[in-house]
Image (tube, rainbow, N blue to C red; front, side):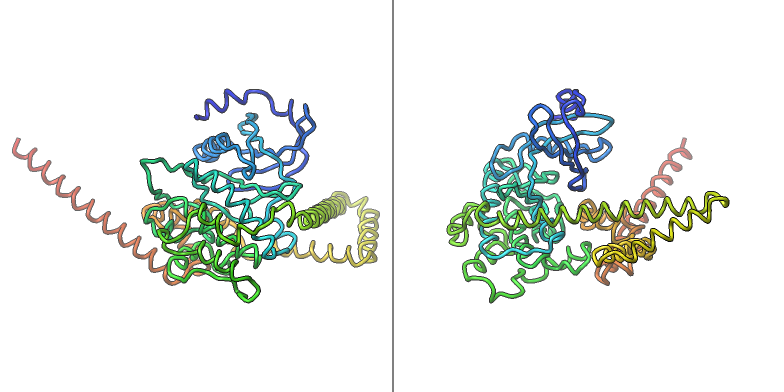
Amino acid sequence: MSLEQILIESSIDPEEDIDIIEEIGSGAFGVVYKAILKKTGSLIAVKKVSIESDLQKIVHEIEVLKSCNFSHIVSYQGTYFKNNELWIILEYCGGGSLGDILQKCKFTFNEEQIAAICKEVLQGLSYLHKNNQIHRDIKAGNILLTDNANCKISDFGVAAYLSDKMLKRNTVIGSPYWMAPEIIQESGYDQKVDVWSLGITIIELAEGSPPLSNIHPIKVVFHIPKQPSPKFSEPDKWSSNCKDFLSKCLIKNPNERPNVEDLLEHPFIKTAKDCSQTLYEIVSKSKEIIQKLKRKSFHIENQNENESESDSEIFSSSNSSTSTFSSFSSTSFEINNENEHEHEIEIENEKKIENKTKPSLQKVSRRTSSVQKIEIGKLIKYRNVMNNLEEYLYQNIEEICSEELTLLVDIFRIKKETEMEIAKNKFEIRKQEIQSILNQK
């Protein structure tokens, strides 16, 4: 499928068919909205992607989604094109992602819930792997829940096709904390990288974050191949079946690591219930919490706008300054006398303003997280590091890089300088040869 084919299929104005309700998420390649399909009144998810983004990956994601038709994979419902944006229409999953439940609601999952999640994710991966696909980015944030608490694998932006002729892939891609050792080592890999990522996701679900989450993502790629396979931080809380299942997912040698079909026969999975039985209550609670957080955020934004308008009125005219200041003061007085909940909002608002004045290190952190998926592969391949990250790394080397990474960057620089010197010498030799020929003539 090409972009031209997609555009031909999506020539209808999306706003004729769709009403956008609200933003529900964002990723590397676009923003996702909750929307309504006008003809049926059914809820859908709309992923808006600028065609100025990585077109190859966008087209690839649509191809993968179109080829999938399975209960535990988010379904694709079509594409529209408007104002240099592709509107990718997907199945709406009202329960949000497991990542949202972990991060926004501060919930973690018990063994019964994790077993149910693993069972449905493995069933989805089994479908993908039988169709020669590798997801390459399994993590809590890419596992969605329906209103009925069924699991759906989503986000196929970095999925890969593995043909019969291509027994291994070599591209360095994925989210660093969940990345299998063989991807980082560039030793070639297959569908078993998804098994490793599932193992890391189990720890993420159990403890709220993946292993090594306290380490910068750029540095993580050095730790994963060297360190022993991760384990639960409190192993006594988990059954022997659960720990055995996790240890099998996180076998470092991919030749010894079981595949998805093997894991579906493991006792931890064979005895697991469906997600609809074990997760329904947590989905209901998390939806309530997320709605409250949205209302709270909306209130803070409105409060900021009102205060900004009040400030502008104060300085806009000297004639009206007294009355405006009185209005502003009374507003402040009301806020100071509101209940504890409003006081918390004020504190959060102050923190928000304070965050804007934090030093450039915070900007570095945000910048790094936004490019980490794209740049991790470039970090490992020295030519791409030199061409795309050299300036960034040197500017922020003390803040984000270990001594090991500093040394590595120096090695890359020396290697590049050596190559330049060799090229220069070859040029001089060739120049002399040409000059010699001209002199003979």
